[in-house]
Length: 200
Image (tube, rainbow, N blue to C red; front, side, top):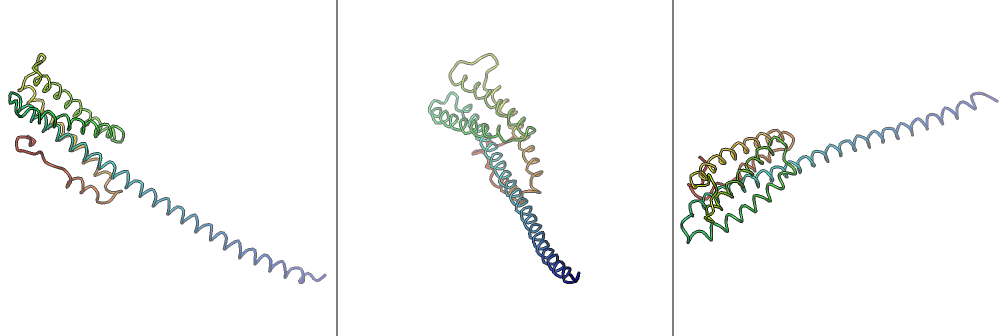
């Protein structure tokens, strides 16, 4: 048998198989590349979602802390003014509940360096709340007084400012991955309702 007669079909078969394999490998490489790109996009989208959730948590915690301090101040000023007390008591209860909810959520997602400051603020708010309520109920403990409560509130404004500094630092660290969402947090901050609630 002529070897050329055998070789020609083999070469043709090898050529066809090579062409098919090349196309298959090219397609598989394209599929892998597309999959990697999809995974990158999914990862970036998930990071943006997580960053927005963190930002929302920071905003809620900051706002609730500010409102809590304002309500404590109102309660302190209302002591001895019976007509004002029912309304300020209810407001204090409401903002305390709001803060507890915001803090409970924060405990699950805040990084430790920020959570430490949030914990200090939350515990401080709870301590002042207890003091103000005892004064309101007429059952003060040793060390309870309006002036002591006022000093604690002043100190808590400082702690709240430090907590916000830590939050801003954490948001700035995330901003490079998550776009311009950080600016929304700064625009969403609310100031206390009256001058007497403003930070020192």
